Each structure stands twice: as C-alpha cells, then as structure tokens.
Amino acid sequence: MAPFIKSWNSAYDVQESFDVFDVGIFKDCSVTYQRKREIEYFVEQFRKGKWIAQQLIDYIFYSKPLYDPDKLLKKWKQIMRKYPDWLRRQEVNLLTGIFRFTRSDMIEKERKRGNINFLNDKLASVKIMLDKVVFALNKTYYHPKWTFKFYPKFKLLPRDFIPLIEKFNDLNGLSFKKKVKIIDHLAFEIYKIAKKEIPDLNVITRF
Image (tube, rainbow, N blue to C red):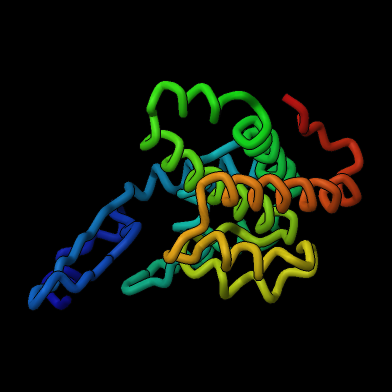
C-alpha cells in the first residue's frame, strides 16, 4: 500500500474502489480512479437536484478514505447527508419497469424465442430494481453489497419481504415462474406502501 499512497495526487485522483479478491493462492487487486473535477461536478449536480448515476452516489456515500488530506470525501458526504425527495421519487418509479417485466407478455415472447439467458439476466436486474425501490422508500442510499444487513432496519417494508427474498435467493432453487411471482407480489405490496408515502406517484401497474 505504501507505494500506492505515495503516488497519490489528491488534486486530481479520487479512488472509487480498491478491491481485493482471493483467487486460489493469489490475491487479485483492482484499483479504479475518478477525476476529482468529475466527482465535484457530479456532487454539484446532485446538490441541484439533477440526475447522476446511482452507482456514483453509492461509491461516494459509502466510501471510506484511505488517504484524504483535504477531507474531500467528508465534504461531499455532508452535501449528500439528507436523502433528497427527487431521488426517492426517481427510484420508486422503477416499479413501472418491474411490472413491465412481470406483467407484460415479454417473458412469454422471449421464452418462445428461446432467449433463456436474457430472461435470467433480466430477472436478476429486476430484483436489484426492487432493492433500489425499498432503499429509496426508506430514504437510504442503495448499497449493492450486503443488502440483507439493511432490510431489518427498514420501517417501510412488506411483512413477508425478508422471508420471500430469502426463498428467491435460495441457490437450491425455485422455478423461474415462482421467482417471478415473488417479485411481482412484493413489488405490488411495496407499491401500496409507496402510494401512501407519495400520493401522486405515477407508476404503471397494468400491461
């Protein structure tokens, strides 16, 4: 780590991630950078209530500094301290995309085409969308890792959410059809909660 920190230029470089994975007897380490001016631009856009990539919000808010002599990360996190209403509404609107998958004829069409890989990938993406909606309802920035640590803390959550998501994630496996039913059921329960929180929410539930 010493050579890495020594080469750091805090005027230009902001580290997005420093990941170390075990690969057999070896360590695989990846380091990525984001320019300081780019981060500052995105944070300013966020402050103004303009859309920025959700992934970037996650990186900034949940990052821990290894070396930050100018305390830039602390300053950016302070700007993001309060979860904004515009982001909450934006993320909750992902429900429309979930219902478009679970309730339209998309699944049947792709099944007939034999596009099974697409359907499995799409189901995984829809599950992530559902997580993002739940985080947004509870005014919490989405964290792509260890979501189960957050669920018990959330007040706005269907009663059967955690046990059903555990079934969904079981690697021993439910059928694709049953997994779709779980997502659709939970999405609609979350939609009912969301309508109470955001009465003028415009989510399409029928396809």
